[in-house]
Length: 460
Ligand SMILES: Nc1nc2c(ncn2[C@@H]2O[C@H](COP(=O)(O)OP(=O)(O)OP(=O)(O)O)[C@@H](O)[C@H]2O)c(=O)[nH]1
Ligand SMILES: [Mg+2]
Image (cartoon, rainbow, N blue to C red; front, side, top):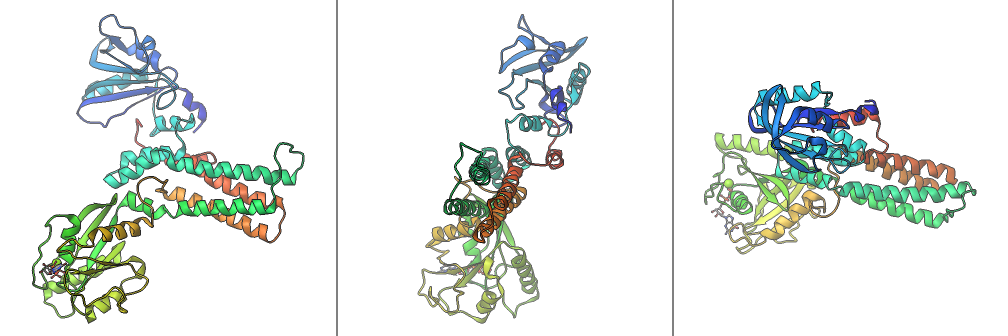
């Protein structure tokens, strides 16, 4: 997209088509105020839009010979606007006819129809948002769940961009020192000792890897997490489900085989949207209905992000327990030893429990140990990172770029260790810089930027 396109005036509907209380025609660009003057007549003796104060609203009419609509018109003067250019928003009645005719009128007066995401693209082009923040705007609009909404707000806050920029600043400084060792003409930057260079590189890689470690938490925030509760009959799976949901959602009875079908419910655990699935107890000899439930449970285990394998701590482990312990992939396994309120036959250090999987001792009946179980769960989901505070990688494109940068610095360290000259090291530093610039948009190719903005709706 040629950049001079950003210096003409664009207009679009900022609200969805159809009928609504109000609908907004939005304009931005150098001619926005002049065009507004031509279509809007303020009520009483008020000044026309071009002489209206910034961030003020006027009541009046949109006219095309005759009155098209009774509206409120807001003027926002650049540079402190969304696009950094003058912005005019006309709040029309939200019917298709007044909106269409108002839009047609401003187009006739010299505005051109905005491309999808062009308002935000201007915000990016003129430095009000970086690319990561612009992507977060699209994510915010597309967010369907509380969790994905939270991830988008996080991105929009610019915390990730700040973190990435601090990496870039350190790399630029490092590159300056390395260049100085190559070319002594630079008089204001001192070359760095190899020790200091190694130290700074190692620190940078560690910080980048720490950010990369937040990617699972970012993904979990954006997409939510599926946790399946499995175990043999009567161990207290449904009781655990109810305890985690804090409501009597599923039926609990003293009879094995109570739950016949999978029951799903989403709960907020430590800021993550966790979809819990209570399943039918797994055992070999069972009736036809139960067997069908068992088959479904197995497919749930295959698709879950986490498997909560419930054992009855008041009984010795049985062949079904052993089989489940052996069958569940360790990386996704959390062992829950239930009925901690009863005398225990399964101890914390029971050799049958896999040493590499976390084990929680709880009582679904009394609530004992549930807080600690929730803590373990959110820790597992977020890989140690959580939705608050720190910057998170919530976007695969960003994750890929940080991994590329960290990889380049690893390569740089390896070359340094084998005594290669600064000229060679500088190449890796520049690869890392370019990779990081992909996130904020400093080095992103125009076609990639086009693709990112093509996902936006018109009017944003
Ligand atoms: N003492 C004690 N009893 C419990 C606890 N958790 C569950 N129970 C009891 O164990 C029995 C079975 O509980 P459920 O939650 O229905 O067990 P389930 O694993 O869902 O059983 P199925 O659906 O048949 O596979 C019920 O009588 C519960 O009250 C616990 O922590 N302590
Ligand atoms: Mg049950």
